[in-house]
Image (cartoon, rainbow, N blue to C red):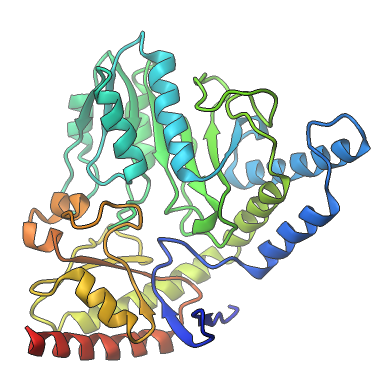
Length: 388
C-alpha cells in the first residue's frame, strides 16, 4: 500500500475523510492524462494519421474498461460524470419508452442526480414509486415485486447509497425486473466501483464516475446494453457513440481506463484495511451517549454515517476543520439545511436525520490518521458541550 499524505493549500498536513465526495487523483492516472494530452493531439474522428492513432488508443482504453466490467466495448458511453450518466439513463429511457408506460420505481436512498430527474419527470406525468426498505436499509424485495406493474418501464436503485453506504442485492433486484420484459433496470454504481465487486449481469444500465476511484474529474461512463435504445440528452453529430455527442476527450478516456484498472488491484487487501479502520472508529464512538451510528450491517466499511444529537452537523464539521480534519454532512450534492432523506428513511428518527455526518474512508487512510481523528473528535465534543 502506497502511503498518501494530504496537504491543504498552505502545505500543512491534513486528515482527509471525505473520500465518498471525491478522491485525490492517483499520480499514475494523472501521468496518463498528461502524456495523452501531449502525444495524441488529433481528433479521434479525424481521418488523417493523427486521428487514426487517437482512435486506436481510445479503442484500447474502451476495451480495457469492457474487459474489467465484463461488458461489450460497444456498450460504453463516455459522459462528464455520474450525474450526466444518471440523467441520460433516466430521461433517455423515459422519453424513448413512454409509449409502454410512465411508471418508475426507485428508493429514498438515491443520489440527487437520480431523485431530481425523477421529480422533473413527475411534472410531465410520470408516476414515481418508492420501494420500502428493511431495517438494514436494503430493498424489501417482496415490496418491489408488489410494486412492479405492466406499465413499469424503469427501476433505478443504486448499488451503494452515497450517504449510508448500504450495499443493495443488485442481482436479486435485477432478477425481479427481468420478469417484466418492458422494464429496464438502472443502477448508479458510483460508490461501489473500485470498492467492491458488483456483477453487471442483471443490470441494463450502469453509471459511474472516475473521480470516485482516484481518477480525473470530468469523465464518467454509462454502460448500456446494446439492445436498449435511448433518447440522448446531447445531440450534435459524431462522437464515440450516437447517444452522447461531442468531441471525444481522449486524455480523460485513457485516464478513466487507467484509474479503473488500478482500482481493481488488490481489492480484498484494500477492503480489509478499510474495515479495520471502520472498526476503530465505531468501537470508539460507542462510548458516547449522544453519538449514533446510522450506517447498518449492510453498509460498506468505506462509508460511516453518524449523528451527534445536540450539536449541529455544520458546527461539528467546522470544529474538525479547524484541526485540518475534513468530513462531510450528507452527500456533497445534497441540499444544505435539509434533513437527510436516506437517514430518515432508515432510522425513522428526525433528530438523527437533521444531525447526520458522513465519514468516508480509503485504503490510503492510515491508522495513525484515525487515532488522531478520534482524539480531536473527543476534544470537539467536549468543547461544543461546554459552549452549549
